[in-house]
Image 1 (cartoon, rainbow, N blue to C red):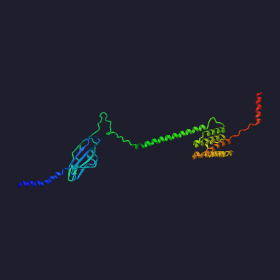
Image 2 (image 1 turned 60 degrees about the horizontal axis):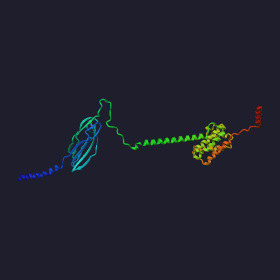
Image 3 (image 1 turned 30 degrees about the vertical axis):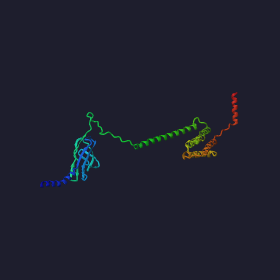
Image 4 (image 1 turned 90 degrees about the horizontal axis):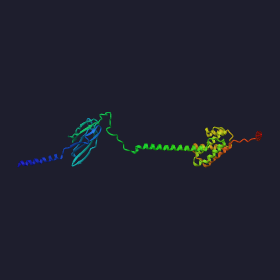
Length: 329
């Protein structure tokens, strides 16, 4: 009887110790690998899982650069911790690669529990293979991976789009300017006849009449109107007074004509040339009355400088008639 009491008492004393031992389970660590066979330069991931009690301090010992010679560590993910069934679960992903072909038995990963207990993971194997070589054509080399095309981003092509639009705009502007110049040239050729030339006075009047018919300034073509008007007058001055007016400025033309007896028409020509310079170089827009006045002054200048016709002397005419009568007899 006394012996039975002793066993019961011993059992009661051991129960707390057994309960504590059962409650404090041993921490575990395991490793798995995504792909155990890769080519040189490819990457694979080691999945590390640790299970421990919530109150235990776990310190994982992961190499920062290489797990072993030939196997490099590229990245270690942050710790993912969860508590399931009163157990602390820690997860890490380790990205590794290798540039040496071989069969590697990766060493176990270590973890320190409560600074006094070290546990080790299982070991996994990694096979790294080289690129197959065509023995018949050993000089042929191929990339391990195909070239990746970047995703389409419209902003990357803004420079090209703006360049094309700017080029099209420049072409349109150049074409418009060339067309305007051609139109002006055609109008100028229609108004100012070249060959055959009439006498200076008749030619000038003919060209001034053509300018009036075209009604250039009424269409807003002030610059073209004064360019053609002054060109007609310059040609007339060159032929009438033997002055190289086509190569002279307005001031030089007026200075050259000041020495001639043009007192009655000098101011008329000056009004035209001065206003023409303002229109062509200062982009002045004359009033309709000023445009009409310029045309009127042009007619006045041409008519006022028309060479006088020499009257045929009556005596010479009579002698000519008598001579003709004698020749007939």
